[in-house]
Length: 178
Ligand code: IMP
Ligand code: MG
Image (cartoon, rainbow, N blue to C red; front, top):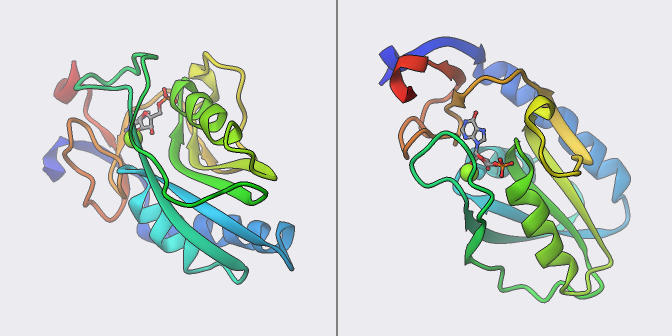
């Protein structure tokens, strides 16, 4: 598994620092308020679990799952919700927690869906951002690291459901997916 990784892009220590920095901003922005933190499965699980433990505000946890990828390394734009949240978010502050904002197809679909449920606010928090690949007009309100057009795995991120359990984020060798 580790032989498929060309190089480590972010170590566990760097990821920890990034998560702490994002959490501090959320704590400040929602001070005295509460949020519903929506984890987008499965890629965000590590980030989400680490982030919510750094939150000092009242926080309800919920989970969604959407698919747009299939087996390829390129988003199809055809997004489907596989699992929706159970929480009533009307009048609530919602923060969507996502692994990567890439083309933006997935998050624009999910954001529009959540906005249709009458929340007070909806914000996007993405650990990674690949702005060079954006197709949809969407920005992250909180973003950890801006990265080039590389395919990364680990810390929740997969290729074909593999590598999610790596404790660091690495660049996948092109030979694995080309
Ligand atoms: P989008 O719909 O193109 O923005 O795709 C977002 C989803 O694509 C993310 O939630 C990831 O699951 C996946 N994705 C995008 N880039 C990468 C990557 O470099 N590694 C692993 N998954 C990725
Ligand atoms: Mg994903």
